[in-house]
Amino acid sequence: VEVRPLSRLTLAVGLVNFNERNLSTITTKVNGWLERLYVNATGDPVRKGQALVSIYSPELVASQEEYLLAVRNLKAMKNSPVKEMADGARRLAEASRRRLAYFDISAAQIEALERSGQVKKHLTLASPANGIVTKRMVTQGMYVQAGMPLLEVADLSTVWVDADIYQYELPWIKVGQPVTMTLDYLP
Image (cartoon, rainbow, N blue to C red; front, side, top):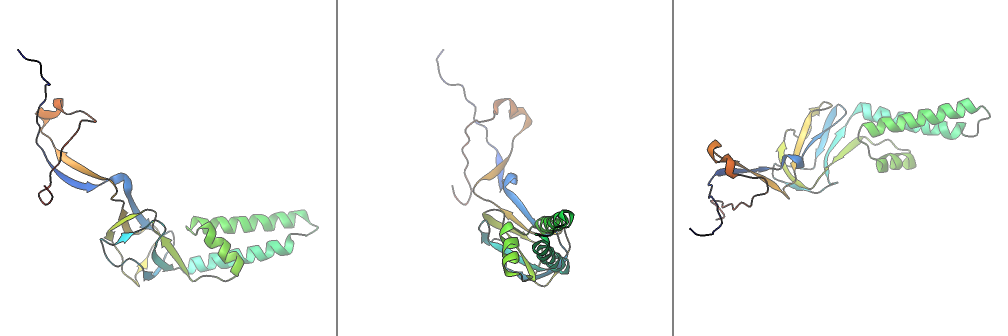
């Protein structure tokens, strides 16, 4: 009899995959045309906040014009002796601003719109994460609809390895157990 660690070697085949928790799908909340595609190919690296696409949407242009009118109305009614008119103008401006925010226009973009007083023809969508473009489902000039997936971005700072383990080996596999992995192209 001897004292020694009891261990079992389990060999498995696995595939390196994206960490599903770090996948982002880029969509739009308005119908429109892709005027510019800043990402040209699958595999392009992107940084968080980087411009990905620029969309022209008549609905978005109308919403911006509505907001500017509401802001002008608020300024005109601010000192109104009729409190209800001033409150109505404030609520209208807040509702118009909220509508722009629902279209994924950032607070900075809304403030720039208010400062300039000029409607922007395009909405630029930015990357929500650092990563690599794994799917490009659109091309420049294409008409897109609200909710349609445009791009998929995967953060590759962590990846998953999906290993196939036989059922009879499961009793020897535990969460947190150390694993050694070798790759054909990187032994």
